[in-house]
Length: 425
Image (cartoon, rainbow, N blue to C red; front, side):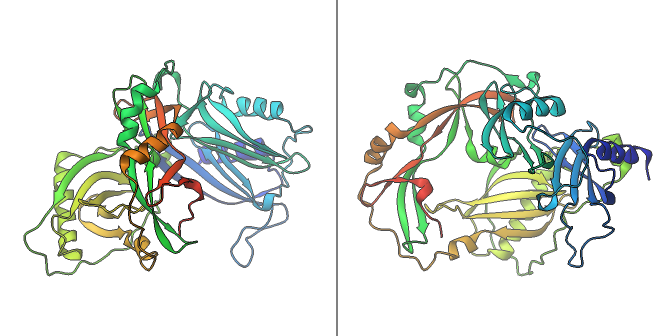
């Protein structure tokens, strides 16, 4: 065993009190965070005392410790004791309380409470925190979760987030007012058709789509880009072809499991997904996408736009949307998966099957409410929440106002609806 791996394993054993546990497996994995940095993790499975192998069904027995640790920082990312049962002889919390948990997290993570994380959920022996910047929410958001058993033993620990350093934050005082953002809110009003499983019909609803407006009220950041947690190369190219290809497209099985060597890990080799897509690669990718679309959607020339390209798990993904989309809540998309070396299509995903789930539902009722009436009804319910948003262009967290509305207006009868109560499918 590599000496550096052995050191990490011993550190984990000592830190968590796994002296009587048996190390079953370990592996190295890597991923890319929103800062385009490569993160290397050592994953381990520790069997509880007196257990030498997995159960017959291949599952880990109760008490197994599944651990992920950052290879370079030695910080624990995830600790899960299967079944919530721990046989570890690590430190116990004699008195599990909020103050003790917060102090322990600050010591273990190096983070500062209310400056970088804050409590959002507290139940018996369970605490959940969210990432913040000076008590202001962050997007994309991160979280810390800890759980204990009745004896005070740790049964779950998880850190998922970025918790940026000061140099990545443009700190400001939130100053946005409704008058400054109302025009943005009005532009976000959309007629959306929700499939209702309860009524077995499609319900037409006016709603205001989420949007981030920068603190100076000059620019906006689309909500969907933040949800995806990655940077994109925006293409926005219409896809058209003169005649369909007769040659059939052959799908290839996608493999996202990657073998990572210890040399790659300890040298900090950049993940392939960190490299930008060059102009030449973009040109080849567009050609490959058009080729696939002319094979699989031969009669739909001019109906699709190639919106973005991005790298993901060793592949290049192209996201396509319709030129003239309908109002359904699930937007029709096609994702084309390209081999990153040859830049040819190897597979694709069409979410049309979502639409098929409600193809037999009753069509929406006749629209009787105008956009103007719907907006006047909803504008009093719009919220503006300060949020630090990661801007992929400047690579900084900038203070924004999140424009959102939890309600919608039924476009056929004018009733105000709580959107979360609309049961989809």
